[in-house]
Length: 72
Image (cartoon, rainbow, N blue to C red; front, top):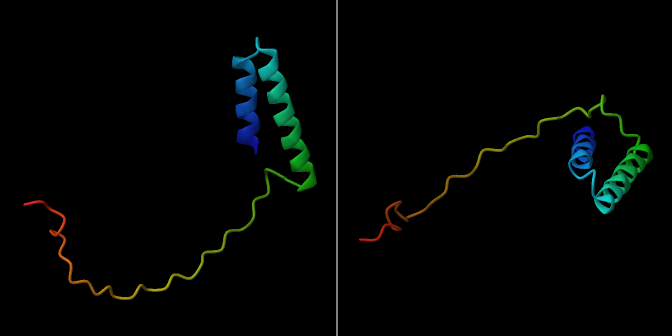
């Protein structure tokens, strides 16, 4: 979310002359901060990632050649 808020800040600088765009950016920033509060978002705390189990793929039985798609 920090990257998103930073992007909004950059957009606000670029379009500072256009009131309708800066108003839309302010609304998005407000919605973002509201979401962060509702979801107890903390940019310093990230959930632990757990690797999943990867199963070996089964042998693919194909009679098709890799050259079947080449035009003669």
